[in-house]
Image (cartoon, rainbow, N blue to C red; front, side):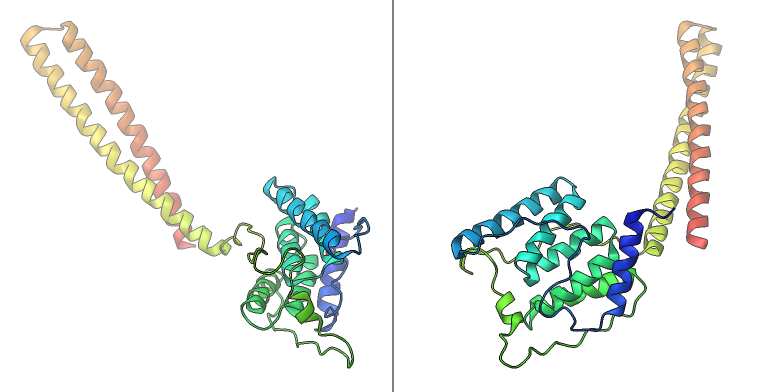
Length: 265
């Protein structure tokens, strides 16, 4: 049986593909599914403090690695205050959680809410990166036109919920950058394995040379003083060094072979 979470992710993906561009210009989609939010105060300064508390709680959960909890908190923040920043943070959290369909829905909303300029460019890059992960064409959506007599939501949403703009943070949620493509990681691992193999081969050769030097010292000591304590010690050292050299050379050959195969295929 397919888990319920898999059904939700598939539904979000289908919705993100099916909805026309500009469909989220006024209200962002209710993501993640099953979102339950407490009512927000309606008064100005009390409402701003509540929104700031939600934002701070979402960031704390991200810092602890609690992405499902952070998605719930940022989902309530987007529902109460759909700004480019809040929607962008929710998209990033959903992406890291693995819900790419929901992340694409909210990323499109964040792009449409963003005013022209660097904020919209960042939102577009985020949406295109998520679409690329899903194998979708990265075509920018058309800019939605607000109906006559209605306020421009993009301009209104550009004002962050919180203190005046002079003291409001301008940075988006800081999360790890998307991982490099698998092919690049594969080739990088091949070079690392090849380098380690070459280093091990060189080290094994050096250890083997030390073993032969100890063996010659043992022969000289045995001819001069017989099988003395020093001769026995030199013989033991030579044997240990020779064993270590063969082990190191074997590991180097294996690592070099693995690296060569990874770089060839």
